[in-house]
Length: 324
Image 1: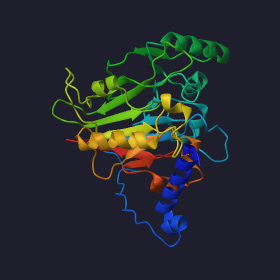
Image 2 (image 1 turned 90 degrees about the vertical axis):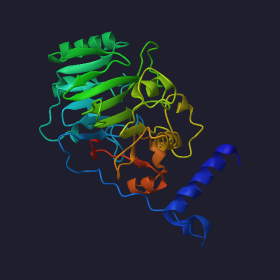
Image 3 (image 1 turned 180 degrees about the vertical axis):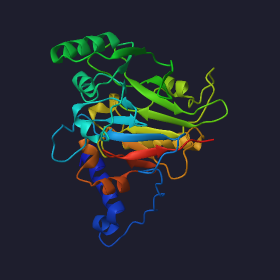
């Protein structure tokens, strides 16, 4: 048996043991400690909390129109601000919701479709300085062909915060490449109600990226090295897991993360008090690949994931509570 087959066989046995030990090891049952109760899903948000609606939670492998699967990854913040937008997620917007602001992570097709933004009537588009000129050209071409008004473009830069609808975004460098060598993909630190004396909400939203780059960690205040940026914990954590369970040799490791990578980061941040979530709030996976499922249902997938991970799903609303 080669290494890949061994890993997949071992992981399958592990998953089966979590779902029901007798199926994996005959009469031997494996006891698994119950996971903590989740208290932040589909609950009302207070004025100081951050409401995140997962419009789509899948990687590019899930295609619009598939009978089963996930839409492309996109979130809606407080019903007002979009992070990424494609045709596949429009049906997940609440009825009558017309967000005016759209923040892009990068220009891959499963995150970036100018026509959908123009049809939705987005008025402000936030794009990295490394590809904003290309984005303007793309939007101008589509707007001219469809006779639609152009939005206003806001150029954003790594490490320079900007505020939209009461939310402060700090663009952070992602470990992710596109077909354009000069383009820098972003992940984001998203803050609400953060002051010198209050954490408020400090959400790290990391899709698409292979791990968390050192510069990104430093700018977010969760780096362990001495710097002129004061350390400060995050209170919420959403990260991609494009590589699936048991697919550790997938070539996408240069641009994407595994559940084990996310779990290790979350554990380290928790143990060093760089991640201090409210009780009942897990770390959410998004940009989930077909391979991460391997035939598992949503509940089975959550049982198979290591703590404190939990798989998001299309339409899920999570309330990230403000911290004192």
